[in-house]
Image 1: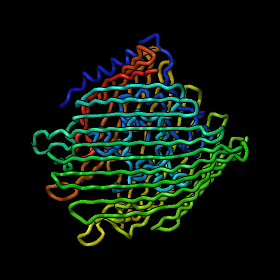
Image 2: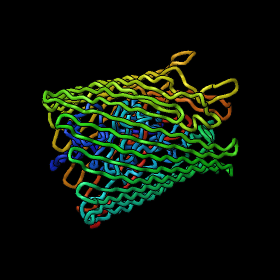
Image 3: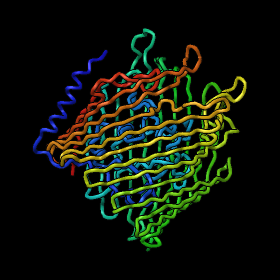
Image 4: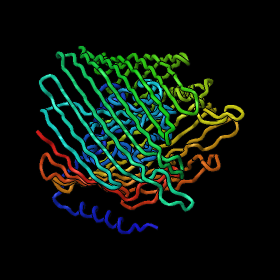
Amino acid sequence: MKTKNFYVAAGLGLAQLALLNSNALAQQRPVANLDEVVVTASRSPKKISEIGKVVRVISAETLAQSQGRTLPEVLNNIAGITIGGNGGNPADVKAVYMRGASAANTLILIDGIPVNDASEISGEYNISAIPIDIIERVEILKGGNSTLYGSDAVAGVINIITKKGNGGLSANVLATAGSYDTYKQVLGLNGQIQNTTVSFSASNSDSENFSSAAPANGVSNFDKDGFHQKSVLLNLGQQVSNRFSLRGNLQANNNAADLDNGAFSDALDYTYSKSSLLAGLGGRLELDKGVLNFNLSQNNVKNKYDNQGSVTNNAGNITHLETNLNYNFSKLIDLAGGISYRNLSTEQHNPYSSALFADNNMTSAFTSLFFRTNTGFQAELGGRLNNHSDYGSNFTYTINPSYLFAERYKLFFNLSSAYRVPSLYQLFSDYGNLALEPETTTSFETGFDLNFSQNINLSLSYFRRDIESVIDFGQIATNKFGYINQNRQKDNGFEIELGLKPLSMISLNAYYAYVNGEVTTPVNTAFNLFRRPKNSYGLNAGIELSKKVSMNLIYKHTGDRTDRYFDGKTFKTVEADLGSFNMVDAYIQYKPLAKLTLFSDVKNILNEDYIEFAGYQTKGLNFNAGFRLGIH
């Protein structure tokens, strides 16, 4: 049994040091408020008070205090989000479970552009491929949002907004070192030269890590599964005239890792590499009463799995073209609308089956009308017409009234539908099923956001999600398994969030999230939110010790879960109960100079022995430390 008393004492000691410091100033992390401006919820800048949906923001200040962390680790501390595999080997795919939905039901955007992976089984994007160093802020939009964003925006949308050039030209260097022989180096360049903006970042990460698979039945420790990541980001902007601007972006990632054979099963010579290239071109034209935008992007992904000379190659390509208009009819009425086209294709080769070549496309037209009154009532009414090359036409809608009292108290109600088509793999692979139908979802959400003062904020939301023809893996016919439609999936839950600023030096954010769900098949109705907890809660504490020293303490409880894994010895699917666990992390940074920041990040302070996926290991007590230097 692991001894925890030392780590508990250390954590309490750090907290006492913070509370006893008499020279502390206001902590930089703000308490959530209705005046924050976001773009994801309406495709145009709006205050959260003007939006009848649940929106959460990971700000630039929060990211600046997360230098040693990853994007999955930061997202895992948001109410209602669980990142599957967050504490495991960095090489493992991180599944984003928002409000208990499967990872395929959360849409990932980079600068507003969908970045699904057409080569993957369910088409979801692996957020581990995005270095946190290139991110300016993250906007999280919860609930069904297929009207504005199309397929996959069923449980929510995560919009990762990358850094853009501004101010004078400057450079920065970052370097970290930590547990498991983990090292990272980043070089960045940011600024503006006359009418041209530039933001460039290049990063390299290496880690020896540990075995992903957990040893079982007295087997000695498995070999380490190393991980390597290289990433380059380039954002360019050009102000062509007072009203017209162009922007271009390029993001390239290359990941390489050692893999294992599965749960409780080691592999000595099994490697994986993934390269991705996202390129885009966009323009913005300012009108007298609105803005016209266009975006063209190409997302190419290549995967290679080499298991002792047995090679599998998968590739996926997505072309996305969109034009959208934001138009202000008056101070009380505005409109967002547009037309989009997406083409997905995949090419997959492996030694055990014939090659797969598949593609499909979807064209959509959407519009949402936003209006408000002087009495506080406001609403969004929207619709989207999709035309899919395999499934024909489909219509989704949004009805989203809300009421704002005294500019500080907001009540909201949201009824919407969503639509998710099967992935190319689920349709055309050896396990595919051409008879699959798209999932159709009806979502209901209601709640409130109360700003009692600048120092106290309380939010509560209840949601219900009903999915028809939910896609699952099962028996298609005698001796044939693959992807099938179950009758329906029903999920419901609620989230409570409390923001407090009891002292000028301290900011506290506490939350509790509950979700329950069941699937109905021709045989029975049963709970099926595997790997996802019904209950989770946490506390994030930001403390400013002085003008130069600040720290964050992060606590999260993840409740009991159930998992299923394939037993390679019995060739059967085994169900396993996973116990609850508590994670305590601490981050501290010191700025001895205006352009120099020193930081240290300690994770799993309690050295908790826990399981996220049956048959796989997680990190014990671990840390990293480093510096960031700005050069002007």
